[in-house]
Image (cartoon, rainbow, N blue to C red; front, side):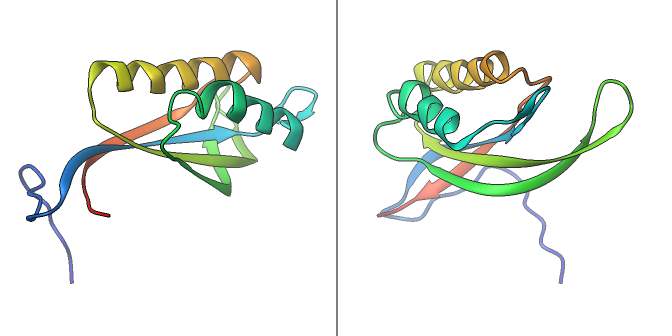
Length: 120
């Protein structure tokens, strides 16, 4: 059956309402791929200091249409962050996306966000 969501997410007792952000980070560069050491350096320098309480990284493969109209297929990483949704957290996510584009010569970083209910 189909599932439709309408209106804001309502959290249950004991759950905390937070924001989940997903960044889709392509690994193809003009001269090869973002290497493991470069990725680890980026995590250590830019991501972990901004979200020291935790994050999730997944290996993935994606395709998208570049500015030149061609379909690009490339290995990628998916960075999943959960945060308070305040201005400081939003700024940190934007800094991560901007630095990734700059450091690894990326045309774009796809960013999605939504409300989630969290319990531990």
